Length: 585
Image (cartoon, helix red, strand yellow):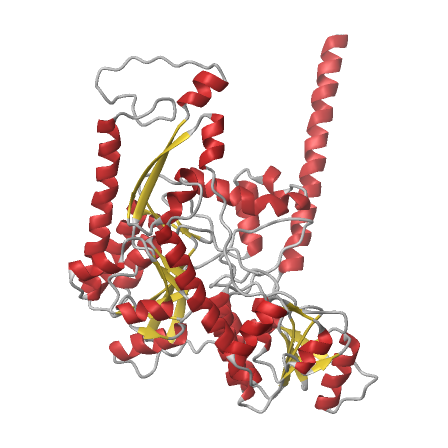
């Protein structure tokens, strides 16, 4: 009897604990839901639009995987909503100025250029833009040059060091631990495999990196010189001689208009607005301002914008990833929707799975065969598989500092037999009924025949890639072979080579799509349709990912490393992928 009492008591205690935990979790979720509930934002007269761009900026609002920490959730405003909000603020009588506190900028180079253009257009209304930072990075300073007044903290500095790339090479390290990378690639410039097979950059890779970095830096310096009355030589001299420009020299060289503390900047803005200095400025955050946008649903004709951003993978349907299942459904839906008259594909992807890329390409062909104009707009990067899914477009738009090209294919398979046999003393033995039944594993080195099989597979994918480009761009196959070879180009250089039709942003691509569809009046609709951060959180929680969601906030700092590991794990079959990861200041 005592035993049953103990068992019953333990079970009852566990049940009560589960009920209590469930109640606590439900209370937390209810609190989160109420905290995230969108509230109607009322814009007051004499407001200042506050542009906080420090966090990573996706193309489409909320098109990122939800990161849940410390029970905080926020909408992640996308690049296009930022630009549209600035455009609306230009003609909004309640918005009198824009203020940017921008020590860092979460947008990449091409996106920074897009925001820069929007700010210059905003200023044509006669309303001022103020930029301030304790210290400016290269990218945040380039964006700040769109402001009427650039202000620096008295103890700050401006980073002017220029652009460079540092690469790690693992060949000797892998050799020391007993791992040999078996590499298959096509394209002299397809350098993604170089860190695993060389000790330094190849001459081909060094050439392409120098060329596209020079193009990107030229665009960067033009952004600065066009607004500050400086020459390109002035900027390069600062990069070589000063590197980090201190406040007094920043004023001397006309890099900034004033050196002030933030409270002084606030007084400056109040003075411009004619405010009583004892009163507070009425700021409206860019995210809140975005909620005030209105759509005219009486307009029936639509131009659909499909945002394809992130790695191209086979099976992971997380936000910020491009998969066949998700994008095939979208393109099929748009193909059959009679109200959708044209489609713009906005690509911001370094590429990935060759299989997925080709399947999505097929959907774009079916879309074109339906008679609907298909226009592509490149964001910061549209390379390798990102270019593949764009190749069939009627027209392609890019910024000068877009990274594109990389028309090449690679594959890799580690041979860890020496690691197991010599280092770990682990031995494998097999039984097989065919010659290659147990081939293509990390446990055994491939023989020449097996190596040739995989190399031939990569070459077949490459030949298909260049045919897709030749057909889509109406180019001679020989011409495509010459400019492909895995080489990376800037958007400006890609236009010269015929890989891009026009230099321009998403708005220009949308206008062209509307022209091709003979539309005078239309509205835009965006895909994929995304859940709110709270809805995504609940879906993950119900799906059994509660433990990961509840992880300590400090673990979030390791997410970029985890995502890189996850990306490598997802590599299946030949890859059409940019040969480097973009890490920008």
